[in-house]
Image (cartoon, rainbow, N blue to C red; front, side, top):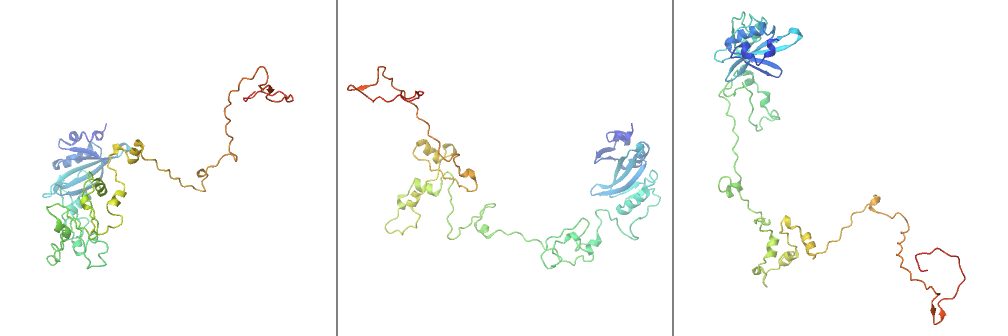
Length: 366
């Protein structure tokens, strides 16, 4: 079994007691102290089989330091196993032993890290700038590096849409990316630009200033001329029509000198309007109460709208002629006289007729 398969749990056993291993995003990471940087690289090459050197770089972590990262890979048995070794050096003394003696491919990567972040790799054979022009001052990938080009030329993200067409239009507060200083604090225009205008404070409304009491109170608006007065009663007190129907005020009756009331107003109009319901949900509705007392008939049902193109809206009988009415039940017949036909005053009730063919008895009289 390869030691790589025991990571990250065995990171303290393989790389030392202070090593911390983790596995995230399909990448195995081991953090070691600065003193164990070179021994950790040797263990990765000799014991874990990570003979392939991929890259080395740094990350500027404000308040923490420069985090140096080395990515190495194991290719044994045609299986790719990646390992990221990390250590942290302080901002005040960014120095670390060089890894060129272990991985020769780290030479150019350490030169780039020295040039961009200012981390010094001791024992490096040729620690000179690699990418930047001569006489360049500073380390561009540090987060405290001032981007001088953005002082002379405004950052594109600092302009809002439409500001380039109307330079005199009011602008919102511009956004500056990290590393871009205020042109009035740094650069050729230092101290020559007027201060940025501050946004005016929001003033309270006139109505709020006039009607507001203590802090946090909502201002009371004055009613408009001719507008109806809004109700100030609670739900339990009911509406204005309920109050007028329940307790009419006799003193409010118009006298002989009173002005004529408008149509649709007054006690008569209030009495003509049905009172609003004051029952709760458990008492039922007005129609339910009327049905229970038997005092109010049901309103006639409204005929539904019929359509000529829908045959089910205009039903027709299946036959042209109405069906025959059912036959009435037959009444029991009186018993026949065994002697002969009934006589009335010595005469037969009916005259004899010619004999006919016998027929089947029916439910009628014999």
